Amino acid sequence: MESYVVGVDIGGTGTKFGIVDKDGNVLFSSEMSTKKHLQVHTFIDELHEHLSEMIEKVGGYGRIKGIGIGAPNGNIYTGTIEYAPNLPWKGIIPFAKMVQDKFKVPVKLTNDANAAAVGEMMYGAAKGMKDFIMITLGTGVGSGIVANGQLIYGHDGFAGELGHTTIIPDGRLHPGTGKRGSLESYASATGVAQSAIEILETTDRPSSLRDIPKGALNSKAVFEAATKGDEVAKEVFAFTGKVLGMALANFVMFSSPEAIILFGGLTKAGDLILKPTREHLEANVIEIFQNKVKILVSHLKESDAAILGASALMWEL
Image 1: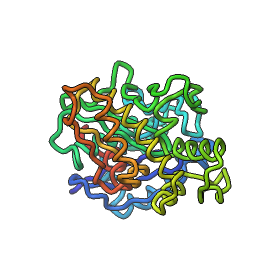
Image 2: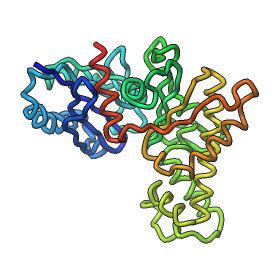
Image 3: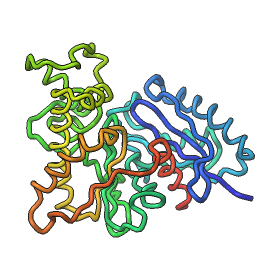
């Protein structure tokens, strides 16, 4: 009798979940809001409601091997989500245990970008690669580092927070961490919107973005304006790519990956962001690293990749 696993990807804005078979086919999937749940238990209740319906469709809980979860600041060693700046729940949450108590099946939890890296390694652009870095560009910037075929977890389970490395000393304040100049404060969807707002507020340059109320200005609006040729919007992506490229140059010189795989909403901007990213990566690495590292965009369907990665945690057991 075939067994299945559940994959859950928790993001700062929304949560995706689905049921996956051994070959990496996502049989059923859906999503729900993360940010409307100020209490973690109401979030788990809603997740249980949605997933129970799906699980019935594949023959009930007896067919479910377990639930794999990718979450910001998720710790694979302890099953906790700890001090996640982009989630509504603060402090240390014993999330895996809470889900296990509710669903009565084994649960494994890790950082969301690590889950995406496992998904890429098993089913995606990194198939067959032993050394690569996964960068997720969403509400925040996450990363999963694979070296010698293994994910780097570090001694406490939190290795690979490349989004919080300082790229511009004394730069932009990150409201979630209180630190300045991190990659995440520039190269996330939130950072793109912030860069646009800064240009609009400090210059009088004409831009269609001026017609959008500040609270409604998001990375999608900036992307749409850039594709229509808006100069301010194009400059925002050029700047974002520059910061990302500088950061990636540092990461390349640290672990010499075969490829950097970009995943998440911002990659939809295509060459608007990829071209300056490649350019500034090459400009900032020393000669021995030049023209060696591929920058790839994940070719897993965005909604599936995170679910696949999270579910892959359970197949590994």
